[in-house]
Image (cartoon, rainbow, N blue to C red; front, side):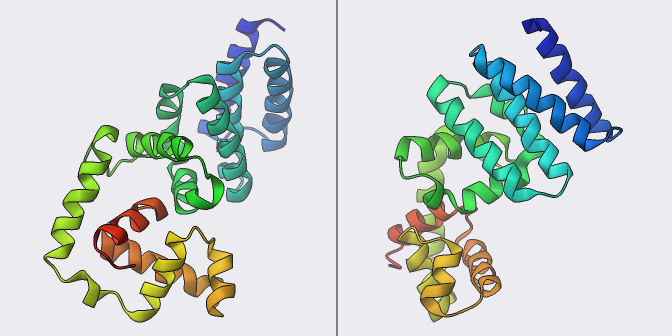
Length: 216
């Protein structure tokens, strides 16, 4: 198959997914064949497009974990290959998956450049974003000043502070529930409350703001 044929097949897969008109097994099989071909030919951009469509397919089949794994693979390839805009262009249908990745970002990645890369993409595709990616540090500082004046320390209860401290250490939700002897659902509930009180959307932002506020 020629390069132009792969592009045409990808367009077809995208349309089938958007319109939800075709057997998902057929689409998965077609995307797998395309991925094998473009990977062998080292067509990086087409490989990324294929991975992003595979991630979307898993969203459509309610398999968030598989979608997250595929998107993580695409993000690592994108960082290595210097791609950014393709994730923004294709990201509007994957915001739920990006949010999951952001929630676990310090567990998935240890390289700070990779973390910054993923956060930049998430900020760019987020429908609720207020600042562009280059203003991330300014946003954290602004929230610090705002929250400090509101007496935030008194708003976080003892358990939330414990969970926040473990989040800042890079522990996963599962590790936190084992450490504190609470259920996974309870950890997620505390994490949601922490995000709301800090006014953030990711573990990295929560940890950074907590340090600024001297909560840790």
